[in-house]
Every structure is written in structure tokens, then in C-alpha cells.
Image (cartoon, rainbow, N blue to C red; front, top):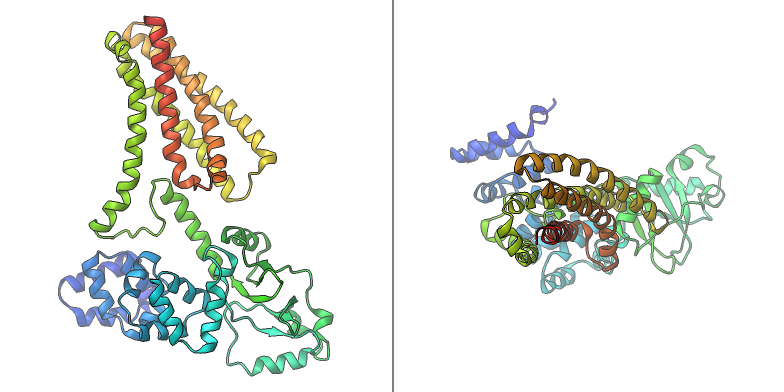
Length: 452
């Protein structure tokens, strides 16, 4: 019979559990939690403040925590992993896929990781160690070692008999991987081919040799692009010598895509993509303080520019009223360009060959929009202060800042990437500083020239 819990909205489910806990109905809450899937349990924990989160964790059986732990975001996952002893961690590792185990171990202190590896069975230790050799943001770090391998000399009948010896196939298995005696990658044998060709057919005659494997050191973002472009369900991964390490499956690629989207969104505010929505005040404060401090430094830089023209501002008070308009318009225009460029970089659309065209277009857009809104604000300022000199000054400053914003927004991401600085993280702060400084300098510099 279908579980009615699956058809209720997440908000209703979570609200029901929270109400039961707040009312002290722990036995009923535990019974309700038993109907939740691991993904639903992870969402519930991530959607709960720390006090309720601790109670929910305590109501979940030890057996179900194994499936739950791999669904949690890194920040929360690390918190619960730190509470487990070595025996529990080894038991957890035995039930998870290799790449998930590697991710978990990389979140633990080095002494604990070594202790867990030492306690593992030799076979399990070897498969996890093979993945741990690679950074978690590469193809090697995403690899599962559960690939089913076959030799090219066998017939399809022999392969089928070999498969029937397995209780089940690894998840997302759409092809078997063909290797030689030295475990060198040769090609793929799709399951569709295995099931539709004559049993006497030799693997060598029907395997796909045009399916190139993924290098283990390829960045995970590039892996995600390959899966998107080729509609893959899984793909083999090889080391620098061409030896098979394992395979990457679509579920791991979906995680990469989600993390990349989270990173771009959170990075724009200077936050970690694994930021816990319900993290404690003690954790949240220092994380945000860093980028607030950086922003303060950039704000002081912009203020120092204003201070250079203090005498002019004292003479023409209207300048103080109009200054924020110049900086704000430049900031918004630059952010539009910056967002388009960073998105294009993430999708792999931008290279040196087409960057020039994009910069040219953004400058043209900056000029046209700058002139349009400069004309409008010039009329407003002239009528507001009955001073057509100041209206011309603010119009010129807005055009200058719009062009600067377009150039900065287009070139900053590439420049930051070349310096190995994340554009999503540092681009916004850097751009704001540039548009503020240029906007204030242009506006107040022109005012000083014409009024003194």
C-alpha cells in the first residue's frame, strides 16, 4: 500500500515532526520518522534548528543512520561523523560506495582517517585508498571501484554466466568495461549489446572502442560537462598510464552540478556552498565576519577617494546627495556583466577566442545604457537643484562609470581565474570597489574642475 507520507508536502511533514517533538511526543515522532526515506530524513535534519536536530538524530535507529549520513551536506555530516567511534566508521564505510567513503574520510582528522583505514579489510582499504589518492574535486575523487570488468577474448555466453554469479549489478550499470590482463582500458560492452547479440559472439568483435575514458585528474566541473554533452549514465575512469580505476555514475555528477550551482549562488555573498542554514551563532559569525571585514576595507578605500574632494563637497552640497546614484548605477551594471561572464565560464562557453567579442558587446551595452540613464538623471538633477552644470557633470560621470563597469565585469572573472582566485567568491567585492572608486573619482573630479 502506498505510503501517504510520500504525498504530503515537505513543509507539512517537517512541521508535523517539529510539533510532536515540541509537545514531547517522542514515541509518536519516532514512529513517523520510520516512514521517511533517507533523503527526507536528511532534508528534515537540515531544516531543523540544532536543539530539534539533536533529538531527531537520537530518534533514528543506528541502522538507518548509515543511509542517512551520505545524504547530509558536508558541514552537518562532519558534525555527526565526529561523534562516531572507529568501529562505527568502519561499519559505515563497508556499506557505502567507494567515492562516498573517500569523501567521508577526507572530512575527518588525519589520525582518525588512518585509524579507520587500518581497521578495514584489505580489499576495502585498497579500493578506498585508490580513490583517496585523488582530490575530491577531480574525476578520480568521484570514482566508484564497483565496475564490472570483462576480457575481450570471452564470448557473450561466458559473460552472461559470469554476471549470473552476482546477486545484483552495481547501480547505474549500463555497460561492462573491457580490460586486458594488465587492467588497461580497452573499451565498453553495453548491456544492450550483450542481451541482443548471439551468445557465440566474442566481446572483442562487438565492444565499443570509440568511448574514450575520463582521465582521473580531470576537474569535476569538466566531468559534469562531458556527462551533459554525451547523455552518459556512467563512464570509465583511468589513471595516467591508462589503467582502469573505476567508473563515475550519473548520481555523482548530479551532486557536482548541485554543488556548483550552490557555490555560484553562495559565493556571490562570500559564503561557503556547504553553509548550514541552521548553523549556530558561534559558527555563523566568524564565517561572515571575514567577508564583512574585506568589504569594510574596500569601503574605506572608496571613502578615501571622497575625502580627497571634501572641499568641493563643502562648496556644492548637492554633490553629496547625487554621489550614491553614480556608484549604484555602476555597481548594478557591472554585476549584470559579471554574472553573465561567470555563468558563461561555468558552462564552458568562454575562451580567449571569443572573449574579445563579449568585451566589445558589453562596452557597447555600457555606453548605450550609460547615455540613456545619464540623460534622464541629468534632467532630474537639473530640475531638482536648478543647476545645469551639475546635471552635465553627473551625466558624464555615469557614462564613464558604466563603461568602466562593463570592462571590469567582463575582464575581472578571467583575470581572477588566471590568478587562481574564485571569480564567484571575489568578483562581486572587487567589482564594487572598482565602480565605487571610479564613480566617485569621476564625479567629484569633474565637479572640482568646473566649480573651483
